[in-house]
Image 1 (cartoon, rainbow, N blue to C red):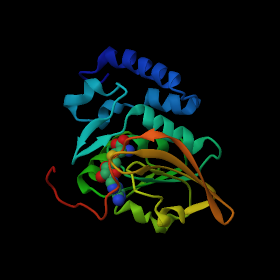
Image 2 (cartoon, rainbow, N blue to C red):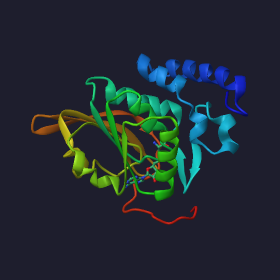
Image 3 (cartoon, rainbow, N blue to C red):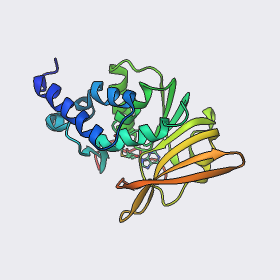
Image 4 (cartoon, helix red, strand yellow):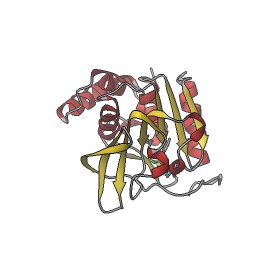
Length: 222
Ligand code: SAH
């Protein structure tokens, strides 16, 4: 058992799953992943006791680990219609959403612009023996051409509009789930590649950190 977590985690994890169900998360595999993955290992030790609350928490560099409901909702929206074989994730952050995806699809490609966050996420996921993930330090608004096209793309930081380079890396029938907007107003949007075009659905209002340009390679917290 993990030190400092103990029985509380079992109880609080069950409570979290109940809450997610009430909020409309019904996909059994999403609920299972949310129940079984150790979210407390993806936050600083000082915050570990709050890891199974349904809230976003700081992970350094002005970034946050997404709220469990949001992770579950985005994953469910991505997997609802087609079962992706490969998924591109933009904004690795803590690596928690990466772990959720990796437990459900064959391979996950994850791009992060902050080296320290990427390195920590990589360590956590290798400790959890999740080996079906490839990481890239880069500007995710450009996607990751080497392995394109992807059946699914999930973006966990908000651009102002759908990045064209990302949409172009979707396979036919592929689905992208992303927040769009500015700091004041964002919508979760699902983009599906259909024939020569794209279909867009508005899902719900959300609040994400902005998608930033370029990479941040400094070693200090900021
Ligand atoms: N899914 C993550 C969310 C982290 S917050 C989690 O739950 O932990 C969003 C992340 O997107 C941050 O780590 C931020 O550094 C990263 N990010 C922002 N703009 C980016 C870009 N252009 N390319 C890649 N990553 C980016």
